[in-house]
Image (cartoon, rainbow, N blue to C red; front, side):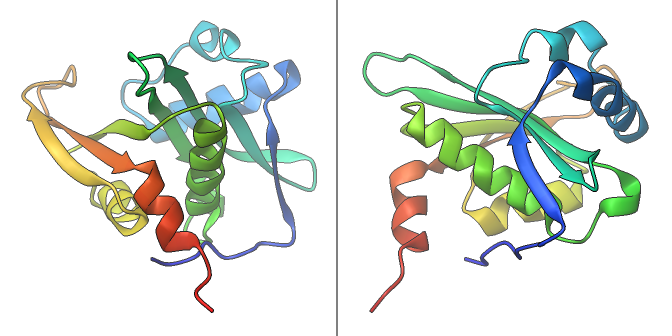
Length: 165
């Protein structure tokens, strides 16, 4: 597993109400079916809503949560995006990894997400992190594209990240 690069000029922290305008702009620039402002507003203050900032400006975000499931809680990475100008610098990977840590602390045993079948960059990031395709959901997106549901066993992911001495 690749360890995310440490960008010394990027800070990852919990999202605040004042971040929402920037988050929504990135969302609209990134996705054909963007979440509305109110969807993000519901997650403000939740541990799984993180933003990446550089010089005080939001350049990326991740939204995740944990759902109780009879003792095997499930984490869900619901949304992840990085501003076009900040991509390919490890920021998305860092956001994803921090999200996984947060969801694990929140009790998740496994983490799932949905990704467009045609989103090669995202699928590569998730696969490189340890996610496996669990199933395909036909016509998941409004435009008819299929989604892949990907799943990560958090314990196995943590074991792979432990230093070997």
